[in-house]
Image 1 (cartoon, rainbow, N blue to C red):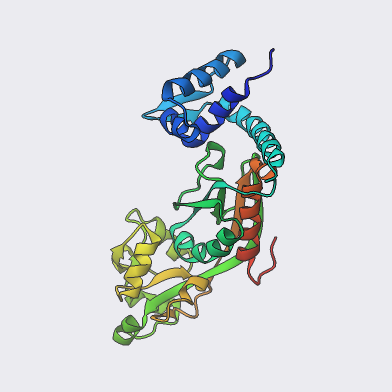
Image 2: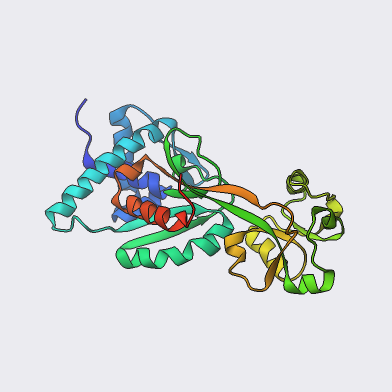
Length: 296
C-alpha cells in the first residue's frame, strides 16, 4: 500500500475533532468540498469507512476510532517536527477539553485554570459540564474528572484521593427548623431531591436515613441548582465537604450520620503520550486536585 498523504491524514484528524466537515474546513482554512474530498480519498486509500453521519454531526466508526490513536501519533510527530524546525518546540497551543460534574466544574476547576493559562498563554481550556461519564474514546473530552474508576482498557486513570460529602442546610433553615443531628431526626426534615424516580431516595435510605418520598420539598437534577436551593433555605442537601466549606451561609447537619466517601479519578486517553498540551493539563490537574490526601 502506498504511503498516506499527510493532507488527507490531517483532514481525518480535524474532522474527528471538530465533529463536522464544515467546522474542520474552517479550522484548516479550506473549503468544505476540498476537505470532504480529502477524507473520501483517505477512506478509499485504506478501503474502510472512517465516519458515519448522526444528524448533522460526524462520528468516527469503530474502525475510525481504532485508527485515530495511530493517526494522532503521526500528527503529533509532524507537529513536533514543524515546531522544532521553526524554533518553537516548547510552544503549547490549542484546545484541551475537560469533562467534570457540574459542582466540580463550577467550584473546583476554575481556580486551577489561571496558573495553567499563565504558564501556557496559547492554551485554551474547554469545560464540558456533565454528570454523565463522558466517553473519552469518542472524543467528548480530552480529560475527565470522575468519581468512579474507569473500566475501559483504552483509558488511562489516576486515583488522586478519596473525598467526602456530608449533609448541609442554610443557617436560616437551622434557625427555623432546629439542628437535626441523628439519622432518626431526618424523619421530620425536608430535603432537596435529585430525581423523581426514587433513585436518590433509595441512596439516602441505604445510607441510613429513614425517609419517604414525602421528605422532598424540591427536586433538581443539576447539582448546582440543588445547592442553590439548599442555600436558599428550602431543605437539606448533600455536598462535598470541601465545596461546602467555601459557603459560610450553610452549616453541617445530621452530624452523627457518617460522611459519604468517594474517590476522585483523573482520566484521559492514550493521546496523553503524544500530546504535550494534554500531558501538561493532566499533570497540573493531578497535582492540584490531589490535595492533602495520599494519591493512589
